[in-house]
Image 1: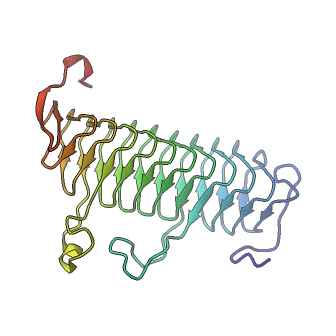
Image 2: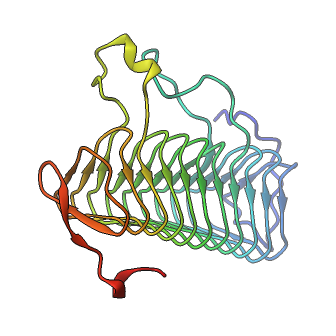
Length: 262
């Protein structure tokens, strides 16, 4: 079996299962536990107290902080693929992924090279975090959530099951995405060459919230403390501290004081 970028095995019984393949140049703290059939490539750094499940792949150069739990079949630090017709994926090699202290990475999660994850972030089962993504501390990326490339997400945010954040989006601190929220960055639906000059994700300012099944179109802004109601279609901006609802979404009422961060 050919394993590119992996030096001859450096297996230590105190920390690595006899069925794991660890590159000689990998730096693995002495108390790390690693399950069966894992591959840890060259120049990986894994901090003290980490627990790694079975069939995990950690690609070259990935940096993992202390006390991180990585569950079975997770993949960390993979380089992106670029289709010939891709409009948002670049062709350059991405730098190693960085995972902060105390993170939890679920079963089957995929974190690309070029992503940066702060401390105590939870990335749940089957979630995907693409390249050139930054995630702030204590944020939750729920089951099956997809975070596309070139996104910035603040601290203490919550993305619930199957939410989708499109490329070029910015989400500030303390924001909330309910299950099934969808966002878009292409007003041309892939059919006009002009689209290459006009890609624009969504912006959610501090404390913004989107309800179950809400849809936000390209370039739209949810202002601070704004709320997009369940199943609403956001075709304009959501005002500060107001709820918008309907298709298309229209101002409905103010956000109650009891629900505001300040």
